[in-house]
Length: 119
Picture 1 (cartoon, rainbow, N blue to C red):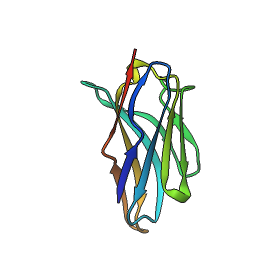
Picture 2 (cartoon, helix red, strand yellow):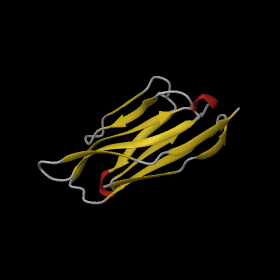
Picture 3 (cartoon, rainbow, N blue to C red):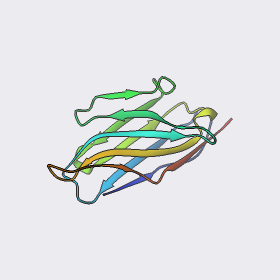
Picture 4 (cartoon, rainbow, N blue to C red):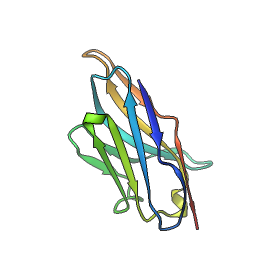
């Protein structure tokens, strides 16, 4: 199972970016998926999470600005990032709990996508 992120880049403060995370491989079902970020010198923290029923939760710092969504048919998750601030600058990692069989579930991470927001 592999998670591939895309959509990172450089944007000015107030701008928008959309991250994608596509899962591939031997997948029976994907339950929860989430985005985490790690700023330079800081811990990796949860940004937003979406469950297989579509319910979501997000960090207070991004509520009202970031929207997490998923397309189950494509095994893909998105993060729409609006009104970006310099403090949003970080590497964003995709995370997923992948059910590969009735007995086996794997927690997978993507390689990370760098988002840089200039002031």
